[in-house]
Structures are given as structure tokens and as C-alpha cells.
Image (cartoon, each protein chain N blue to C red):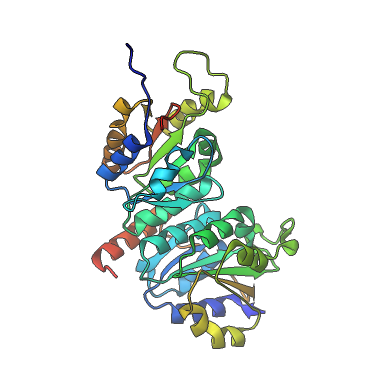
Length: 167
Length: 190
């Protein structure tokens, strides 16, 4: 029997904790709400909710300057909205920020009809931002790879979360 | 109305070991007044994000006061930040917003809707703990201790004007200012 391949929030949170992430700066939405319950119950990682995605990079920059280790959690549509913040408060200031990005419209086996999915990788390429794709629990360790690369290069790195989440 | 640079002087005299995030015209004036540039973050870019950077700092450094020197012209483009800060409720954050009528950030061009925005009301409804507005230097001087020492997040609207030329932007880059503050905090944990 083929085992269902899913991604559980616990796998992502375990990666964040393994990398000593202190804060998740996020915009609550249907695509990235998968971790809300578990993160709010976890004393090791604090949530910082925002009103608009472009705020996440600014808050993360302040946390980073203040000695913390944040990540951002937004949807791919939010990456489009956040362009100036990623440029100015990520790339230009050498901020080693990992951005967890809900890959709305992603379909490994079909045609991506959602422009949010069609454009996101091109946009990241345009900025020279490396990205890792996470679809199942087996991929979760790519978050550690992203964290290592962000630290090594002092640049933002994206993790595209292309899946529906298991409970 | 408060002469803007004199208002900045007052803040400088009271800032102590506070971290200061400043942007747009406030940065231009603050850069020539501050005596602790090792604790100043210069948002010479992404200027509307000064509140967000200040919030991140305030959360990361809860024992240290964080001042945001903002300007109405850029806060207008990022009003949600008032709700974000109100919700996070950092008690150590003081958010100063310069409101002037001569619009130096657009070289005097009118900014659509500026006269209709009540920043204090938005901050109040967004969840700031204390709200102030000052339009005289004397009132600001007498209230600075209360403004700086009380529990935040605190919102302070300053009605200002600019007497004389506004200084140029600091020559150091935004990246350099962030690096400097990171290193200062590493070497002098609070």
C-alpha cells in the first residue's frame, strides 16, 4: 500500500526549533495558518502577527539587529506585495532571513493555473534569492539547508511550502 | 508649532541608552543631532517601515527603550503598522510622528489626504497604551519625562515646522547603521 505523503506542521516546527528560531513573523491567512495552533502553544517560538506582508521583513530586521533569530511566514502573494521590503530590509542590509512561503497554486502533477504559482519562482530568480521546495515531512530538513545558506551568505533565502497540510 | 530640530534636541537629551529608528525628514535632522549614533538605525530606504523595525527591536530588547522617529507622510502609506504595534503592545516603544504642513518629503507638494488623517485616533483604536500630541516646545519639554518613562506602546504626535535648511541625509548607509547597532548590542548587552 502506498503511504500518503504529507507535511505535518510539527515537522516544520521541529526544524525551526532545531535552528533556534525565536520568532515567526506572519500574516494570518488560509494558506499559512497550518502552524498557528501549534506555534501558539509552543513556548520556544513566539508569533508576531502583522497586518500586511511587507511588515514582516521590517519586524524581522529589527528582531535580527536586536539579537534574535526570526523567520517570516507568508503566502506567495505576499512576496509580491513585499518586494520593496525584501529588497531594502533583506538583500540590501545583508539580513540572513529565511522566508517560509505558502506556495498557493502549486501542483506538481498538473498545470499551475494560478498566476501566484506561475510567477513566484521567476520573481525569486529575478532577485537572486535561492529557494527550497518543501512538500512532505521528508523535505522538512530543507529548512535547515535554507537556514544554513542564509547564515553563510548573509542574504534572504526562501522555502516554498507546496502542499496541503496534514493534521 | 514646534521647531522640528529643537524637538529633536529634546528627544536627544532624554534618549539615554534608547535605540532610535528614524526615517525621512526625521532621519535627516536626527543624524545631525544624535550623540549616540552607535544606537541609531537610519532608515534611509524603506522609510515607511520604521515602525516595523522599531517593533522588532522592542521585542528583541525588552529592557531597553526603543524610539521611532517617524513622519506623517510615510506613516500614511503604512497605517496598518499602528495596528500591528498596538496588538504586539511592546511597553518599551515610543513612536514619535512628525506632522508638518510644508511637506518637505515631497519638496512641498501637497500629499493627498494628509489633512484628513487623525493618526492619534488610529493609534488609539489600534491599541497603543498612551497617546500624546504636542504643538508647543514648552509643553513637550514639560512632558518628556512622562512620555519617556510611562508604559507603552506610546504614540506622540508632534506638530512641527522647519526653520532653516533641513540637513542632508547621513552619509553612512542603512546597512552600515544596522551593522553598527548589532555590534553595539553584542558588545553591551542590556
